[in-house]
Length: 77
Image 1 (cartoon, one colour):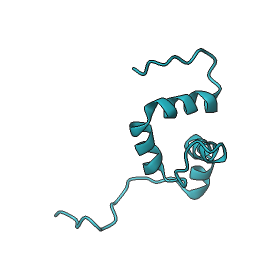
Image 2 (cartoon, one colour; image 1 turned 135 degrees about the horizontal axis):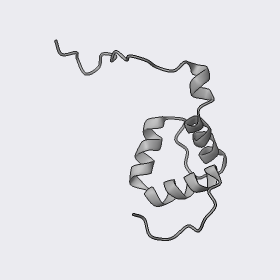
Image 3 (cartoon, rainbow, N blue to C red; image 1 turned 180 degrees about the vertical axis):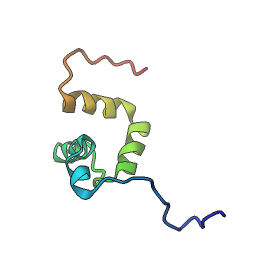
């Protein structure tokens, strides 16, 4: 039986608020906001959309956040 679009979906598992708060994804979201890079208001969907719509800025920010050592190039693969 198909559920209405507005009905909450059943999930096998979902993290508790402590796990979400301490996740690297949440820390990355806070980093972006604090550094005025992107304000996703801690919405992972908005962060995902930004990563798709602005891959250059997203991946540059990932490099900075994770402290990857290397040379950033202008070419996005």
